[in-house]
Image (cartoon, rainbow, N blue to C red; front, top):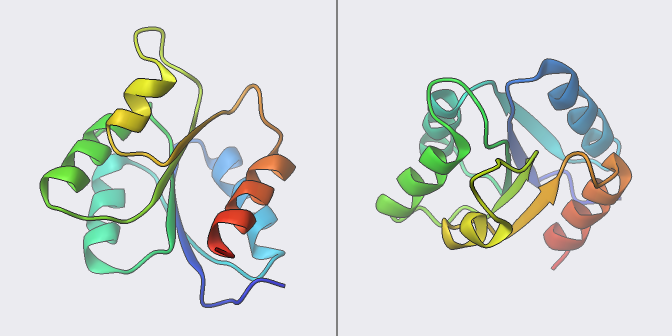
Length: 124
């Protein structure tokens, strides 16, 4: 069981995906919060401490890239995993260069593997 002080923010505008990731992570003792758009996510990151953020790229108000750029511009070092379907005009390297630790393609990774990656990261 993971120490339940590990707090994760999921920034995802699709409720079913946010609920599935939340349910999967809560089984391992993580404390989960959800933001449904980039603006709400940035506000939560600035007001709270998170061990990890799981970020979608395509969202209303602010995109995932906007969130990453804002975090970088204010010097916020909260670790971010991008969990999204790749945009046609960007690459995994673009996501990493924008400040994410890793990119996981929703269509190519199982929820179980994503949870495993989160557990591995937070146990370091």
